[in-house]
Amino acid sequence: MKISTTDYAKTLYEMTKGKSQGEIDGIVSDFAKFLLKKRQAGKIGKIVDKFSQIWNKENKTVDCEILSVEKLEQSVLDGIKNRVKEKYQAQTVNVENRIDKDLKGGIVIRVGDEMLDASVSGTLFRLKKQLKG
Image (cartoon, rainbow, N blue to C red; front, side, top):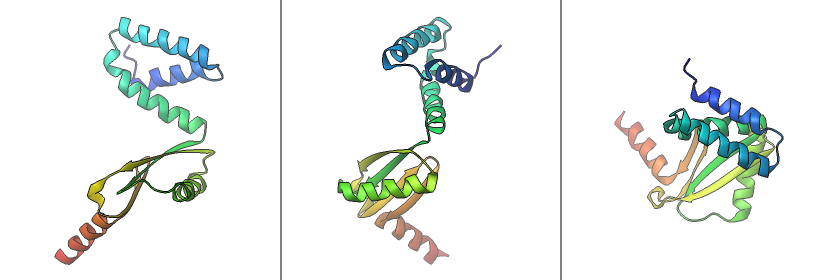
């Protein structure tokens, strides 16, 4: 029987739920050894991604990536964080502010599969597309 990455991730989540950090470290180590033994090491990246999705959903956590030309002030990040928290009804929002000099100005906000492009580059691209017809 073939076990999917989702099944592995769900199993790992159930094994770690409610455990202390020390216990989690041991469980993850044993789980990695198990995957190596079963020649499933190539799935580790996908399992970790799926585990993260499950953990975030169960713990009402949202990951938010903000792209900007320069590092944003903490007050701006906090404002975005609060809006994302409201929109997604999250208890926790993990914000990562990444620098992208190609934006020319403005910001791009990504949450899961959703993206809000309020960048100068994105606006110019959309305008050019509209003008072409």
